[in-house]
Length: 561
Image 1 (tube, one colour):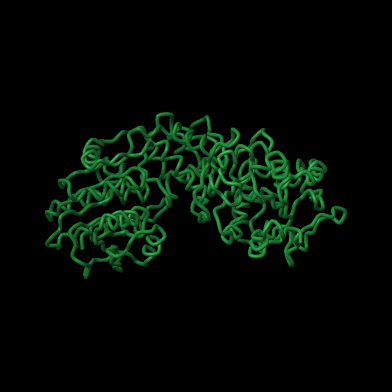
Image 2 (cartoon, one colour):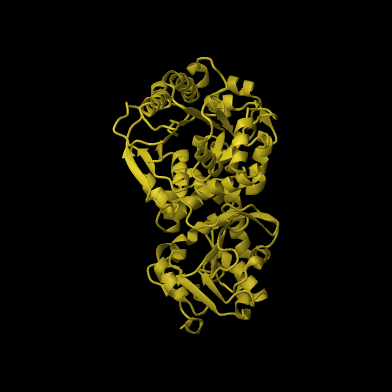
């Protein structure tokens, strides 16, 4: 084999395996349980050169295939670890990998992944002061260097900074999550705090080049141009449409204050430093291999999209591409095909675009599904929704079917009246302006605290739908600052526009299709042709997606029959 990767199911390890396989190398991957193969398949990586090996680095190693290059990406990365738990992987495990590598007759290089902070000292780490994670990584770094010298093992240590990319939900990600959910009232550290980043794609390309470089180097892999922490947080806040904190709390004060008050994990505080790092050798290797680090701000924006799409590790994105875009001057969460969609899907309350996942999976062509302004993951706007919709669809070159649900039916109808040349058909699913008005509770301010505290299970019961990923996604948004209030406001606004929407229904010059659940019919006074779905309520796209998809596939000539 060309290479063996320890820790191959980890965030760095799995991406390294993918990079080496893509380069045509034969790779042995050491795992405890094989979650690697399905992940590689999901990434479209050819696994013909892969051999899966079951192993545990906390025990002495034997019976592994002979290789040329050895990568140890294994680490126990978490805060709050016990000392023994942390040392088992980060110290004992690292030495076990080195001892085994020393037996290989054709070893070219052992590449040990350390950390940008842990190689900053030659003294014995203080577990009580630093915490088990950082202290064990520091001890492991010192032990590996000393043992490699004794055994004359060709060693290179790579010290990456905070590595970001899809699937990274630890470290800086927790700070971004607090920012996103409105819990980051003040920045930890001072205005000169330097928390450098490196993207996972850049790091694994760099690692793939290391074995051919001279041994004995220590490479600090990080972006020197990463903005200071306040700038870093502002970049993400501006991109996601949330407010960045204007105040900061010095590290010294954070250490003295109770954790219950600050919310800061003591083990993370040593990373809040103004220190800079010796990156010259890493830059030289990158230049010789024509590797270029992506701009830090662009990398942070893309990572923020990934974090929000995955609910910071709690969910899996259902549609791509995804991300925040500026629509009518407001930051808007947009998923799907932005230029040639067959269907544009507008969600109702109190949901977001994830509402459409079961239906979209049954539609034959690409879809475009945004979060409406002020709802879900989108920031609020002062523009009318139909103005926002016109700007969203200004980039669309097809004539899609415009599908709206509940409260979104009014703005969709107004857009269809004003822009009949932009869409081929209008589909109104459970149109609120043709149904009984929302309950008094939903229209009052009392709904706001109830919505904000509502669990996914209770929300599902309230809506009469299964507690699936779509409901969990909506419940997560309702807990964010301001979203529940905007939902209640949208209900009242929609109610005030019912008469106007009813009057516009006869002015639409494109085919109109109305779909409702049999348990949630139109108000009898409004005798419009509608398709009823047996057994469905107000959310037929969630409970009966196959039937809704079948009706959407009907030809315009058959609509209303």
